[in-house]
Image (cartoon, rainbow, N blue to C red; front, top):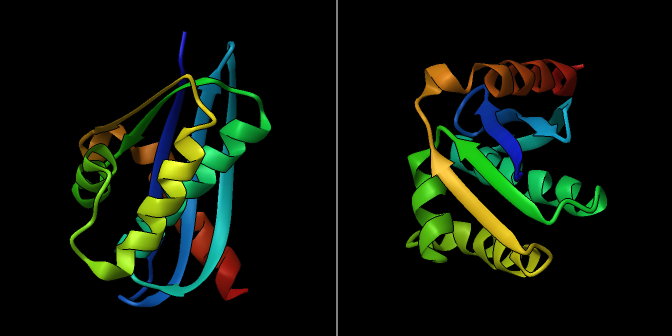
Length: 131
């Protein structure tokens, strides 16, 4: 059964202090991560959530992963393996490198109402970054 990873990025301002939330479900366990980021745009925070989520999965040795995001920009770019916006291309390059660590990698867009746990974790991370 694939690990399910719900990700979200948030920014207090665009750009502004940002954070990411990652909610990971695997092997009957659930783990939550609130990670403060520096100043960045909301889209950059969303991409950062994907990259950090992938890194966590690699560290845990998870080989089959299914990501959920409420960011259509991240979903489209990740599924296409390409971003039109040049400022997002380094995220896509890193994502493609990390994908090599998985046997199966999926990412799917979900409505915000289905991503509330990751959203709350991302907002908590913004407050942590503000000190």
